[in-house]
Image 1 (cartoon, rainbow, N blue to C red):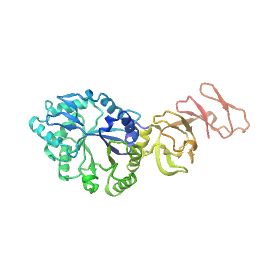
Image 2: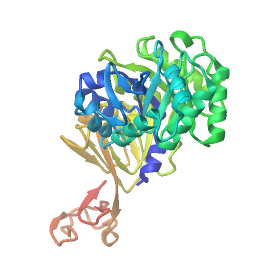
Image 3: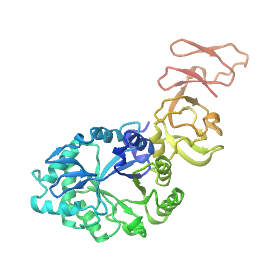
Length: 415
């Protein structure tokens, strides 16, 4: 089975901006995000007030170096933690600072001029309190659309890196500013900024992602869920991948229930898959007879979000091919729960009643028992076989292999 870090590497590169809907409609929104297959969630947004207080939607997050959001949102810290807690496909969480009409970076500039970015400054104290309360936040997404001051931005993100936050940038204009920020920040803190999310909608609708290659960073390009039909957006992402050097996709914005997160995320992850896995033992197909899209997976367990993170839409698998010596178990529930069915067949052109039904699955190795592999007696033979605890299992037929799970506890027949 892949190590956790390798499993995350193999996932697709998809992000979604998430508005206050995540708090207003919890816990359903948290569950939907975990099941969606988006591998990165960007929480929109954190605003910096003129006195350094951190707010969102008019509610106070951190004030005077203390996390106080629990007074208004008592479940928020646990919800953010849950986003990356299995069962989930999410491996990264960012907070966004900025956006159209948001003056946070002008305020950050003034606060840095007055107090600097040292441990006694209000910016340092409040973002330190945020990190301690929400340690699962990996990065801050810079969506400056008003200030564009390189010096202040570099100072701020250097401080943020020292507090444990990476930086991503979300430009749509003012390329020279973003080049200066990325170049100077990564010169001072190598690797502090690790990706560019270019806006190709609204004010950036005519952006060419190829023009936003900055500092050698990977470029992710975004669409909106309301911009056009999903099929059109996915086709655009394929063009960006093939012609513009784009390696990831994102969507603005999850703030209502008018679109299907799982279908969008799984489709984006098929456009921008992670590195090919040399340990893959099964290929799953969305149509009977090995048709439709195909996704290969290594041995392991996969909840609904993880399947989507690898490009598999929920309840969308109809056939498979699998290496000998492995067993596939499909579950109707999103987290290896509910009704289930297992196969050790090397391939199934039609999964019968389980076609387009599975929401999670397990792939595990089974070991052929060396004592009776295969049994070659007469079809009418009454030779018996037993499990490793000596319990009688039944009689053998000619040409049938005996197999057991990797833990050696169960012996069964495999066609």
